[in-house]
Image (tube, rainbow, N blue to C red; front, side, top):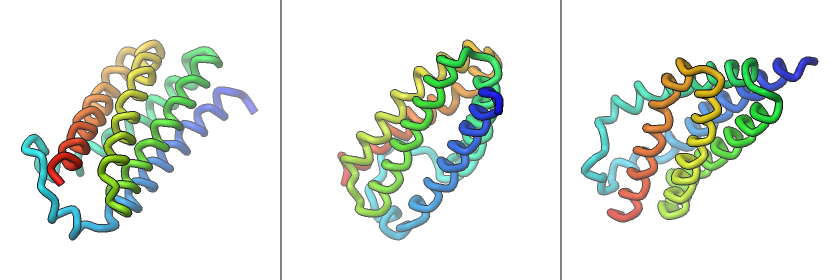
Length: 155
């Protein structure tokens, strides 16, 4: 099988793991979540419902574009960084919503935000348009990281 096809498949699988995995834990303890003191800069709840589907779709598009446009080494770096960022994001979801370890969750989401930077740079190399489309994901993860720290500090 051709490297580009395998890399594309890996990228799409990572998006699915990210979307499904985070959904499992995020819906785990909504009563507990609603009892928390919220950071003052938290956007309204409907924003979450809009931004995450967009982010997952664009991550899938970026996976395809990167796999088909960049060198083998760049693709491996992008996929590796993406895989680690997905693990960190899932660690956030689990630690925040299941054992309620807000400090660990905050570190996990901060790591996710940092890992999006090299992903974004490589995506811009693959396509300026897809890089621009992925920029809201990087911004959102940075905002989400600040919210995680806000929850940790207020609770």
